[in-house]
Length: 441
Image 1 (tube, rainbow, N blue to C red):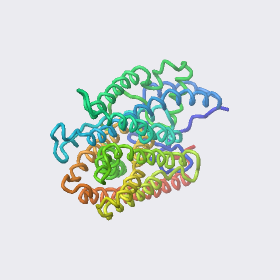
Image 2 (cartoon, helix red, strand yellow):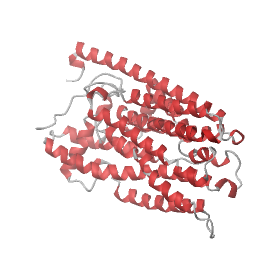
Image 3 (cartoon, rainbow, N blue to C red):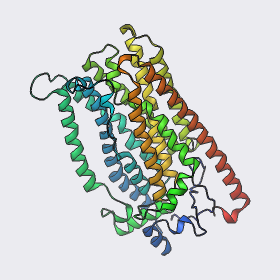
Image 4 (tube, rainbow, N blue to C red):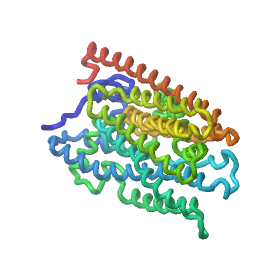
């Protein structure tokens, strides 16, 4: 059995997240299209005689790629959230008091570009159908990996004597692991399919061709300004970018400030750290529940955004519980339950990034949308903490109202984007049926 090379469609739209039963990611621009300029290596391969490969070859190659890409991405992505959970633990253990920080001052932090980078790597190696599960696997560690580290933070919290305080030990531990991970990624994370030395020449050719067939964009050193301009004029891109801004306000509550919020319920600093573990566990479970069905079940294949919106509705319920529950200590368990429920909305980031990665043709387009989305992700993580006013602890009504409003906006935007894509894809499918010579062959 061989995998024939599909013919690129002639339609100009490229947002195919909800297009059923097709790999129709299409070029834009001149008559020759983006397809002919896609990537140098892919063009060379596709200009040559077709490379025939069996289903068994394809399966073995995919497994080989999985064992190299997914573990590295999962560890690196999870470690980023270990860092965030460590920041919350450090704040709970006296970071603010020792450094004389007031209110939200410690909230001004730099964000890493790790996840957008992993997104680009994933889209260079996997087809559109394969991406949701891989995104889900390596982003699941956002919730899973911090859990054992919370136990470590709990142990470090018992350090009350010596020259190094417990919160400094947390930063030293995370810093060492981050440095080692940087070396690990530099040495073992492959740059692109066409340059992967751990694959044979034939395997590299197959790896390049199978992604080039879907026109998802292999690594390309030529930055195309015309693609930037097209992307910035694309309303679909802005819908996804704004989704990132509104959805990530809840992320600040369930990562950086979680320990502080829980401590404000009346728990000790040590217990507050242990009680953050369920939040990360819920996030990991919801991540699998949203990422798995689109991969394994046809009915859910084009419904990632509705699933994420549903998870966000659950998060809204958690915010409302926190907002209306009285501040008295006798209600602390109810407030803790509200915090845990909010974590269900943590899946939004992955869904938005996976849609961007799977639905924008060309490496430059993908970089543009990813960079813009991540910029607003950082904005959300900077602005949101400023709404959690120290004098409002432990209720934080201003901050919770802000997050509730933004998360509700995300639900509306996500649903609207999905409906727009469905309508447009139905139009494309109808056009392809009526004009078979101009559609997918």
